[in-house]
Image (cartoon, rainbow, N blue to C red; front, side, top):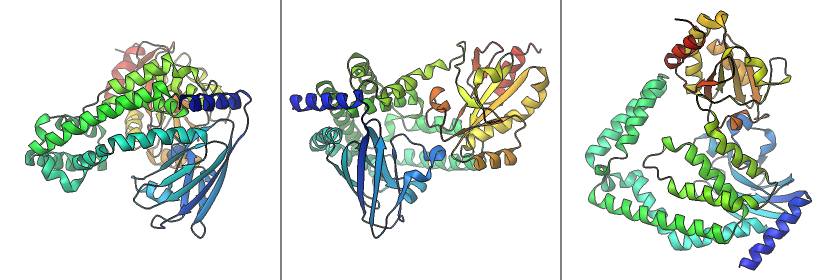
Length: 432
């Protein structure tokens, strides 16, 4: 096995050294038309909210579809049904775009079937097969914990009642765009879901068994990457870093499995597939902590209101500035931005400015949101992640964020609430 994998890696390295063109043929069959005939085939990590390009869509005709992917590196791709994606919960198949043919069968409400003759897909498939053989029971345990039909067996009546009330309050808070209330309710929900007393005796038994199997599975997968470095291990590293960056949104989060994979990357995996774009994505994801108070704000290019590429530093130099990263499809972002309007009007003639950058797949979406919300400051457009502004700011596929900087470009805050930002703005402007 080791000799086969070593040979595969050498061949891959030879391919990337010469930057040979990758040509991957995808041939598919639609097994159900429950979600229509529109199919998305896109690079892993693509956010359709900002990058819904027509080139990513194919249409099944008489139950068949096909697509040819050309690229300079072997890359991980996903395939899914667009209408299923639009409902908010969807299944996707994964494959590597590499020289060869990928065959796909797409189903409704059940896992898709993907087969490939590519080397990297085969290496990943070998690992997945072993994980399923050894730890397939883990999925059944997770279903017991999370499926609604088993809730009364797993959780106490007090917990279910409290959770139902919190969920109802969350819906009201979302509908009223009350973001502080949403945040506080989410915190309360996380605390409730962390309470060991939430389980019945059977639930606790299932949970403990699931945790032990999860640990064993993680240990096996880690050791497999130690013994068999492959392209999938780099994508797993990227996912681990992104998960660590967002750890605050998870309940009962255990960072150790993710942290050791990141350590393995720096000790070993960083040396495989040199020049592959995933290495740059990993470096960007690891740089999230650059947005901390007291550090200098990063520089990057954006398109100004005239459509010219300019450094962000040229737009904020010498002023107390709020960089507002937002999107028309991000409700919380827009709520935070609207709340800043009276503060902007109060201090705009005293050295304060707002530079807003909208992450969109269509200019019209940004313009419509501006008209609805009435933003008085200049709004720049990050169209289809052209300049990777979100990645460079370490916020990945989230809706957005805010960065307040001093006149010299030092970060003062990454808060998003107007009531937190105004005192800092006044202090930076030397206003008592």
